[in-house]
Figure 1 (cartoon, helix red, strand yellow):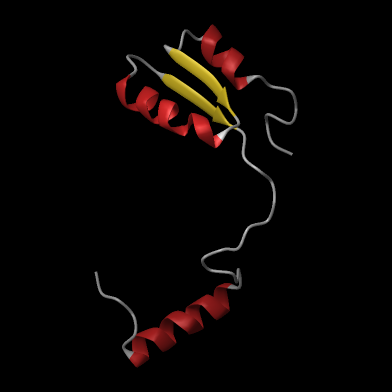
Figure 2 (tube, one colour; figure 1 turned 120 degrees about the horizontal axis):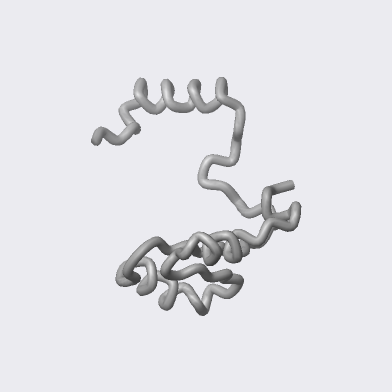
Length: 84
């Protein structure tokens, strides 16, 4: 459960705190407008974005720290790790 699941209206709180812009977004079609708003609005901006709770494939599927460490060490040993 998150803070918004408990019924807290973050957009309402931001407006009460006199944010220049406070919006709720649930559609990806609004992304260009939100981007412009974030870059060009004067004053504080709050965007509350509703995202799907579906499990999506992860870039690093495992959450096992030991396995991640071993994979990283193998990559270093094999020379397949990228240097920055």
